[in-house]
Image (cartoon, rainbow, N blue to C red; front, side, top):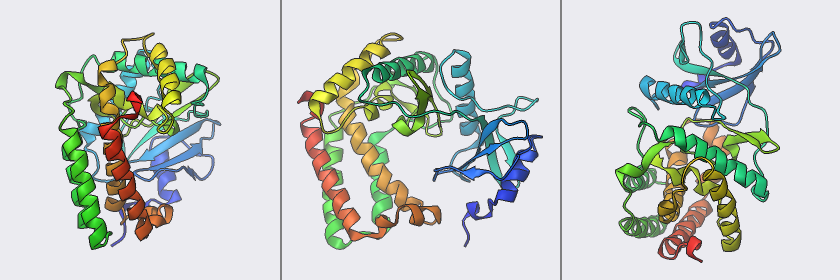
Length: 324
């Protein structure tokens, strides 16, 4: 059975764009994106665009539209994001044959340098401005970050895939159970949940000098504010961790109080991401792009390494590096 994206040919991409009365000057260029298909093209007026084709059956139309409306709200409040293009009727989510797609103006730039204090300050200020707006209301159709249930779901996906041998499965199960036991110590009050970017790593921040823009809100979710902060902190340098955090905090507090009370959630959130990532790879393996991009997933050595990472992360949950 062919994957739905297998029919997404360059001709189909161009026809979809042209259906909006925007005329590509040449074939689109595929960018690195696995969950969706994202391409760059230039129109006949010389303007660069990003066209994003959504993975079928991942998000409802309502959830995608809520992402778009969130971006529009942020842009109107002068938060540096890239809001989707809308047609004359105000539509930002478009349809062509079996696909849903969206156009975004291209945002050039480079990722911030995390060893540059000015960049860290700028990132803190950007996230503070984001959260100042996002805290004003809640998502209705986007997911809420639920760590325990998300980890159990990931565990089931991985074990159902039959990737690991019996010894690895037992070790993986033990590590997951240790993580879940530690998570029981961390209550996330509903009042701490705000609309977050959800996947705020360096690849989703673009800019130059000290002016940065957040891109790719595909994983925006209801989560504690620290979800958008912890990926900017080093994992293996407690002293560097403190200096990074100091600059980010100073910038963040230009817009709103820093969520210091959420610091204890950083290691649980790191654990959640580590576990969910492997489950994501397993669950997407039928997409031909994944075996090409992640061939090492089929190697037994990958699962040995993943289990060691989980065991090390259990130690961090017991003795968080931010207390070092």
